[in-house]
Length: 342
Image (cartoon, rainbow, N blue to C red; front, side, top):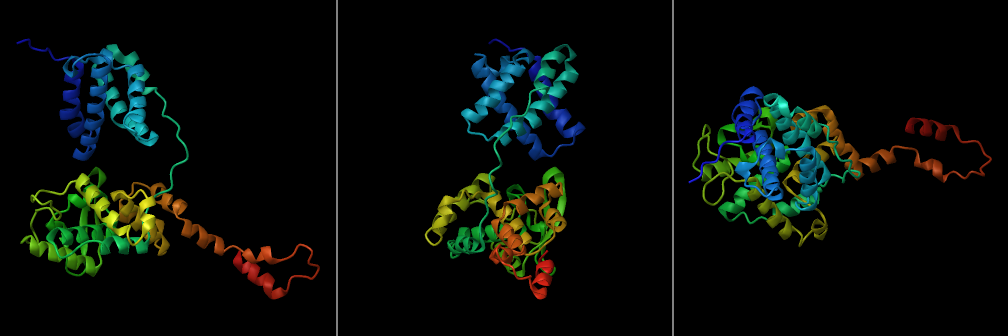
C-alpha cells in the first residue's frame, strides 16, 4: 500500500484548524465550522479541476486564478449570491491565505495575489423579507397543538417571534438558560460567544414551562429545549423544514405567503421590524438582537414600507391641494399648521 506524504497544504490546514483559529484567534466553534465548510468546497473544486485527489493538493494549486474560478463556480453551480461569494472570500479564503503566507514566505507572491482579488459588486440588495402580524397568527394557528411535536413547534416559533433570536441561538438553548418566573427571560449565546438576556412574554414562558414539564427536565437541566423525534437537538435544517411545513399550511388562510421567501431568519427580521414600528429606539433593538453595530439595525428602517408611509404622512400633503393660481393669502391658522408639520 502506497503511503501518501503530507503536503505543505495539508500540514498548513491542520495547524490552521487545530491551533490558529481556536487557540490564537479564539474564534467560536460555529465560525470555525463555517470556515471549514468553505475550505471543503474549495478542496473539492480544486481536486476536480486539477485532476488530483484531495490528499495530493499542495500550495501550488492555490493561485489567484483557481480561487477566481472557485468563486465563479459558487455563483454558477451552487447558486450562491454575490454577498455569499464575497463573504467566503473575505472570511475563509483571506484568513487561510494570510496564515499560509506566514508559514511559507517562499509562496508569498502567489498568496498575495489571492489577497488582492477584488470583491464583486452586486446589484442593489433585496428588501428584507418578514411576516406581518396576521401572517404570524396564521402560521401559529396552522400548528396542531394536540401532539407533542405540535406543542414543540408552537413554542419554538412563538419564542423566535418573541425574541428575534438567530436559529443557532434557539437550537443551542438549554432549560437552564430559561427563567420562567417573573421577570421571565432567556439567556442566549450569540455570535462570538457573546451572551445577552432577552425578556419574554408570560404567554411564551407558559409554553416553555409546559415543554419543560413534558420533557421531565429540571430548571437546572442542560438538556436542549427543542429536540427532534429521536430526542436529539433540533438542527438548523430541521427548523427550516418545520417552518416551510407550517407556512405551507398557513397559505390556505393567507395566500400571499406563497409569494414570500420565508426562512427562519425572516422571523428575526419580523421581530426587528415590529419593534421598530412600536417605537423602540435603534440602540435597544440593536442590543436586543445582538447586532455588532447600529448600521445593521438601520437596515430595517430602510426596508419597511409602513414606516415610510408613516414618515410621509407627517409631511405636509395638504400643500398639494392648494391651486397654484390661488390669489388669496394663506390663512394664518393654516400657516401655523403647516409650520408645525415641518
